[in-house]
Image (tube, rainbow, N blue to C red):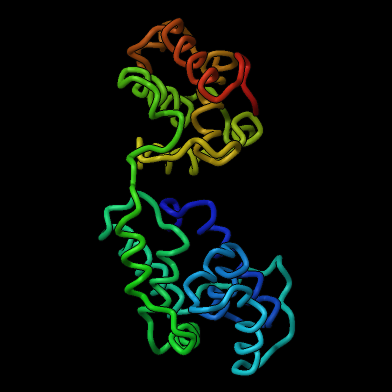
Amino acid sequence: MFERYTQEARRVIFFARYEAGNYGSPYIETEHLLLGLLGEDQASAKWFPGESNVEPRIRSEIEKRITRGNTISTSVEIPLGADCKQVLNLALESSERLGHRQVETEHILLGILRIETSLAAQILIAWGVKPGLIQEHLAKEPSPKNQGFLAELSQSEKEIVLQCMKAIADGPEIEDWEFHTRLGIFRPTLRRIISVWPEIDDRTKNSDEFLAVNNCLNEVCNGFDIPPTEWGKWFTYSKDEITQTYAKWLRLRGGHLGGIR
């Protein structure tokens, strides 16, 4: 569900889960999402007219309007509430309608405001937060197709990267039990990245996308023990061409052959 969310937007949901557990809520509700948003993106305060440090006052207002339960351990999964699910779906819808590649924190804020009966929306509206201003701001934001190092690669080099990821994801050489150890990500995560290719941002070091590109190229060049008779099943490019692509990608990110894991 969250593959198109930015790292910041994903952290909003992570913090919302923490807030729900802290207040003993059996569900992640919109008020927890709002607290997660204010905790992750301090710039969100700019949408509150004439205010700056709004988080403590918003928290105090929420606490007056909810019943606090026993703290829930972080090891216990807390599901999204119905309104919260709708907010996240609306955030994705807003992103798509504006032609944006990813869901950002502002899209989540817009989603909250659209569920006007929710506690979080009622608080935002009472504080004078205007969805129109957020919408106008987002409409002016550029949305490049690729913001990462891949943008600097040629079409054939991008195809090489994709072939390497597919070979690692579906090839017979790496067992499930050792996949994360060797790649730094799980096989389903890699397949998810392949499914949205090339709409990924690989610039954030150690993000899933970064590791998918870096470590799959590294694995094929340095650790993928595929027999020569099987090479054509996975690749239309030679090992030298893949190595050259890997070297270029490493130069773009300031690295060297051997990569990171």
